[in-house]
Image (spheres, rainbow, N blue to C red):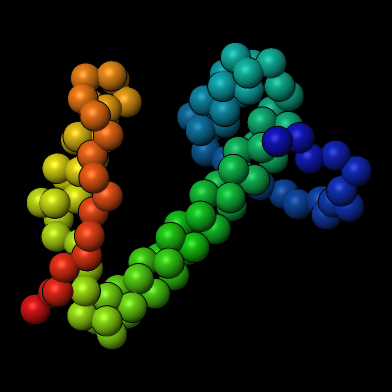
Length: 105
């Protein structure tokens, strides 16, 4: 994910020597300058953080919806469904029936 033509702000980052060496090695392996590698690494970290935040929000909404409706999916049924789906994708069996929610007590 190249970051180009973006206004930037200079910053100073003091790194432990061992970490800087590791970053330099990784940057070299990736064919990037140390600066470019660190910018990409930080951008990826921000992206993952936003994804985790969205996952948490979505999970909390789903839990609230389940509690409100009183219906959901039993973990054992979900595991069995995905196991059957994996076998289907490998061509070993027919596609499994869609899961139906059950009343949760």
